[in-house]
Image 1 (cartoon, rainbow, N blue to C red):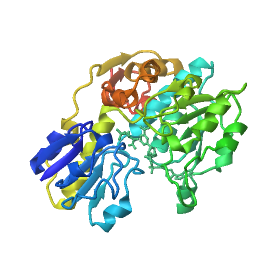
Image 2: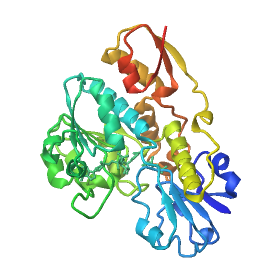
Image 3: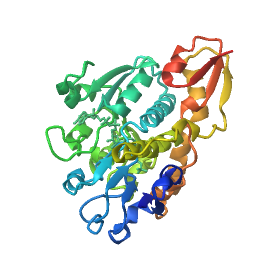
Length: 373
Ligand SMILES: NC(=O)c1ccc[n+]([C@@H]2O[C@H](COP(=O)([O-])OP(=O)(O)OC[C@H]3O[C@@H](n4cnc5c(N)ncnc54)[C@H](O)[C@@H]3O)[C@@H](O)[C@H]2O)c1
Ligand SMILES: O=C(O)[C@H](O)[C@H](O)COP(=O)(O)O
């Protein structure tokens, strides 16, 4: 079998070589010719999988995307052609949660706020939104969830309207990109809403760039009352509106989900789905594939107030490192994709075992590994 994979996807050789020959290709520039004799196609979010790309792929039987978002895949086309499909729901939700918490801690320091007592509106309470919500609650933040589809489905959690969520001190977007239907999210944050927000509100987007109207956002940022912004995703990646970058507090190149664990889980979930759909036995375990982290053990003696948690969290992952790299390089051609391709190894909080005699339930709820002194 010929297995075409995005060259930036880890573990493909380890997990898929037993099924055939692995052919790594740059995801953004894959062509119909390159897929002509492919049996399996494994992509990331940068490959638009549609009738055009698959025009010559007569043998193709499985497409997998190692991502949560699926807006780059024409699933109806795949179904019509009898090509099986799998994505990786939830694979990087922990990574996105950790990115947002790191960003909130940085913003709190910058604007001299205590997170405890602030309100956080979460727009989209699925995998990533719930991951943020659970972590934020441990900081004493009052979380308000907005998710009309889940509310209509009878999800037992309590929800607020979009307008009420937009009243919160902090507002974080975690919706899929959709252009049609009752709950379409394209420009969900539109010009009118952007103009009506208060300048002290903090907005974060780690979902899809097109969920915010970036042009309208630029106009607001150039006004006398700009908003406080954290942006991981942008309209029209990789050719983003660079003028917006200086008007953000934190800016990164779509890497919120880029923990090593998140990326490994993405490929692993495709391996499991492929085995299940084609009758193979799953013989490899993800836990055995993850390397030990550079810093994997430390001792905590101070009580767990916000400042101490911040030190601990930023020892593992500090979003300012990604922000600095982004600001330094974004003006150079091709750097958006290059920064993603050469992203340094980033580990999740669970990679560190914290030894402490203190009450460690907060640490455990945040996802650290904890051991008694
Ligand atoms: N920046 C990154 O690195 C990164 C990483 C992972 C996911 N993502 C993006 O984030 C999106 C969300 O991921 P997820 O795992 O939480 O997906 P999910 O499907 O688990 O959750 C999305 C939630 O949004 C809700 N929703 C849909 N339309 C809505 C609307 N109009 N208003 C409010 N809620 C609405 C859905 O009901 C669902 O509960 C993905 O689709 C992907 O595009 C980005
Ligand atoms: O949808 C997702 O899972 C994320 O946006 C993902 O992290 C995107 O990364 P990419 O596939 O572009 O490498």
